[in-house]
Every structure is written in structure tokens, then in C-alpha cells.
Amino acid sequence: MPLAHSVDTVKVLQPDGSLTTQQIDIYASVQGPVVAFNTDNTLALALRVPGLDQPSLVTQYWDMIQAQTLAQFEAAESMLQMPFFNTIYADRAGNIYYLFGGQQPWRHGGNFDDYAKILHGSGPSTLWLKTLPFNRLPQVANPPGGFVANSNNPPWTSAYPQPAGLDPAQYPAWIAPSFVDFRAQHGADFLMSQPKFTAADILGGKMSTEMYLADRVLSDLLAAARSSGNADAGAAATILAAWDHTADADSVGGVLFEEWWNEVSADIGAGKITPDASMGPYVSPHPAFRTPWSAEAPFSTPSGLDPVNDIQLVADLANAYTVVQANFSAQGGASVPWGGAHKTTLDDRSGSTQDFTFPFAANDPQSGADDEFGPMRVVNPVYVGALGEFISYGGDGYVQVIEFTPKGAVGGTLLTYGNASRPNSAHITDQLPFFASKTLKPALRTQSQVQANAVKTESY
Image 1 (tube, rainbow, N blue to C red):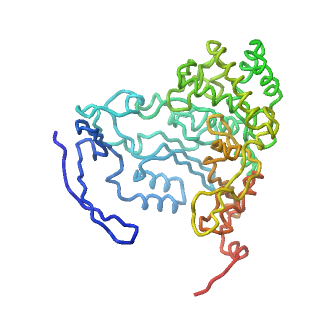
Image 2 (cartoon, rainbow, N blue to C red):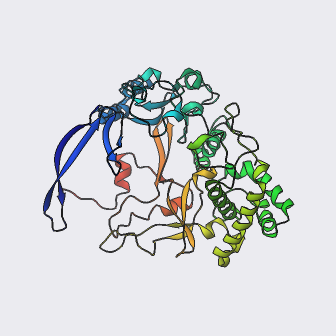
Image 3 (cartoon, helix red, strand yellow):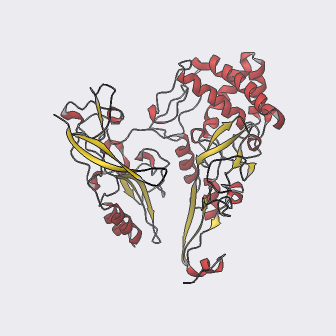
């Protein structure tokens, strides 16, 4: 079918404040609007987006906010104006609810993997024309396990033991893949660890930097390193054997394990290491495990390292020892504490511009590892050679803990990177001490609380 074509104009702001008019060609296909052509215009890339005809997203959010009961909340969610998102709910009556929500295209058979890629648009098999109704989406209310949770994972283990509403056998195979990454396993294990929690317990669990990946694979790595005869790998094994598996600021060993994993990931990409296939391509690459991930044991697998990769894994450990020894020679070498290599840094945005500049406003020891290691407190690091340290670019940007009490909801919040971006504002870096101490600032929810903490009052 020919592409639909129209012409429109846009006005472009110029440096001197004037506007220029630019004409643009707009193309669309039955599959959706065209977003790109190849160089000789023989192929077009169309993007079919659910929700373009759903104009009432704000209305749905408003109704969700206003809901006083679970039934009212479900009614608001059933509008399906929100294109996607996991949603969880709790109320003062003790109800909890989870929805794998949004606009889920109704596919023509196959499984999730078949559609997680660019599809050929020449036939009707790739053209979806409707989305699943609300009652066909994975969801559960008040599951027997007593919790609902999701850490950017498929819906099937968002409550456990798995209720019927989250049984993948009850849904088409194209809705979502099946895996549970290490961070989601960490959170589920924590929630199943005791029958009741205080708000302090929940905060403590959220701030855990334990690396689940290390819990699963380190013993096999140490055994391979000790039997290899490689001096550097043996020295690294000695450090890692005494490590507590955390990314807390004063923990020794985590930086070495992190660098080993970086080496392993690069070698998987280079084809030097046989990769794991049990969790699919939707998590970070892993080397083949001795026991692959299994839906029958979703929180205790995968584990161990397949011996097929032992030679390269040990070589990577030896390389990691050399790299960490050199990069952090002044901070303890291969025995550098996590916080000696990873710093809590934030641009203070001082002066007349908001450019990303050095130095930073803080340079304190930081705790928290990248998502792929399986901590609950996630900090995404990048090594800056000019600084000789890791700084973070993402992760736990916003944390909130709410407790429903007889006197109302109470809790705390943390916006790690601050509530302001204006140059010279005091509120760019003032939450970093809370982040460093794994605490939250109180959530001021009433007028009297706000007035009692007011720094400045203006009347008009």
C-alpha cells in the first residue's frame, strides 16, 4: 500500500530570537507513522504506538489519586489511558493490588521474543488492530503471599506463591517473557523473609547493597581461581574470600568483583565466553550458569558457573586484579574499599550557567552497585579517568516509604539529585547527606508541617 503523505511547516527558534519556517514531509503507513527511511528510500521504519488515540491519561491519573477504595481504583485503571506501567496499590483497609497495565497489543500468535524486534510490515501477521481489555491483563488483588512488588520485571512473580491471576499459562505467550533478574529476586526474598515489617525494616531492605550475583557465582569463581595456578587470580581470590558481598562504602572486595564482571561482560560480547540463555536477552549478559534459571525455582536460580568458561573467567579475574591495583594504588590497590573508588558526586551548578562542570559539590564515599549485580539500592557508575574514581549517572533517583497508620499516612522521601537545578540553589545538594546515611527526609504532608519548616514566606 502506498504511504500517506502530507506536508507541514515548523518554526525553528534562531540564536538571535527570530523564527525561521521549515517545511517537513510527513509519511504514514497502515503500520503507523514513518520515523525513518534508509539512505536510498527503499525501506521505511514505521512505529506503531499504542495509546495515540487515548486522550485521557490525566483523567485516569486523577481518578486513581481520588480513589478511596480498591474498587474505585480498579475502575480508574480500567480506563486504560496509560500506555504502560506496572501499578501497585495499598489502602488503609489492608488491601493490596498489582496490575501489569496499559495498552497491550493483541498479537497474531507467537511469543514475546517474536515481537521484541523490528518486524517486516508487508503482511497482516505483524499488524495488530486492538489491545487487550482490562480483564485480560495480568493482575491480582490480595494474594495469599501477602505482598505485591515488581522491579522492572515480567509480571509472573509480582506476587508469590504465584496466584492464578499471574500464571503465564492463563495468558498468551506474547504478553511478556519469563525471567526474574537478581534485583527482583533480592526484593522478593526480603519480602518473604518475615511475616511483618516496620517502616524501618522496609527502608533497611530497600537500602541493601548485597550483590545477589556474587552470592550465586563467587564460590565457583574462587575454586577455579585457586586451582588455576595464576598468581594474580589467586591474590584476587584471597581478597574476595573475605568480602561480605556488599557495595557498602567501607566494604573491601566489591570493586574487584565489579571489575571482573566488566571484563566478563566484554568477553561475552566478543564471543570469548559462552553466555547464559536461560533468562533471555532482556537482562544484562551473563556467562553460562552451572544451574540455569528455572520458573520452577524462580528465586534460587541461576547459580554457579559453567566450567566450560573457567579458563577465561580466571583470566578475567587476573586482569581485574591488575586494573584495580593500578587505578586505585593510592586508595589500597586491589583492596580498595567500595567508597574509596565510588564517590557521591553532584554538579553544584554554580555560576551563571547550568553546564556540567568540575569540580563537584560533594565527593563523599558512596554505597550502592549497578542493577546487574542485584542490589536493592541501585547506583549506576561510570569510571572517570580524569578523576580516578567512579561517579554515578543514575539509579535510585527517587525513594519513598509510606506507612498507613490510624492517624494517617506518614513516611519519608529522597530525591538524591536534589529538588532544584537553578544555579547557586541550596537545594541541589542538600539531600546528599540523607543518601549517604541511607535515610530519608520526612515527607511534609500537612499545611502545619510545611509552615513549621518554611524557610521563606511570601504574601501577595
